[in-house]
Length: 287
Image (cartoon, one colour):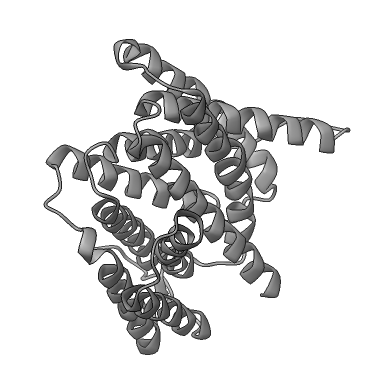
């Protein structure tokens, strides 16, 4: 459990850092959304291939699968384009709401059940997220909201595909390598909208090579010790970590709202993790 906890914390920090990099690049319009996605996935694929190549001398083969790769691509491209028309708070609320819904529905359909105290913890964590992002929530663009919802569903499915993967590094490398050409196709289709700068390319590369590629390997490793409901709930910590990153890296003020919402989010997650989920027997017949 200690190893799973440590890996999960590292993965959540990577996700939050990735969010900050994406906001910096797209918010300042230093690069277009399609190019950001392409650089992100291509740099991630190259980084992972090099790691596999130089750490696996006996075999440099990668695994992964096309369904997971498609979900990775769908998440990355929808996420980038959604943030062109959504505020950060609105986007985070939609994204993580859909991630939770997707993973919980799959978990419940698979027989996982929450104890009452776990449901309480989940409700507290959700309330903390809503409280944290509520000042930035605005009436969302229908297109942007739909894209972010799509990103949330795709990320939820991608995470679920990673449960039980025997070799997280190989699987993540394979998924990035398969997803990169899809991103290149989107850039080719939107060639007239392409613009960028060295800063935008650097932010996208950092997002792809470090916080996405390596972060997702860590996440896949953590998923081996998490059930669907816990994997869904723990991701509620990302908005709080991202907000803290904004304080430390962007000189944003520490507010009582930040402290209280972070306490609620992390406390609610702690409640979920202290409870054992129950696996119910599948019914003999379906309805």
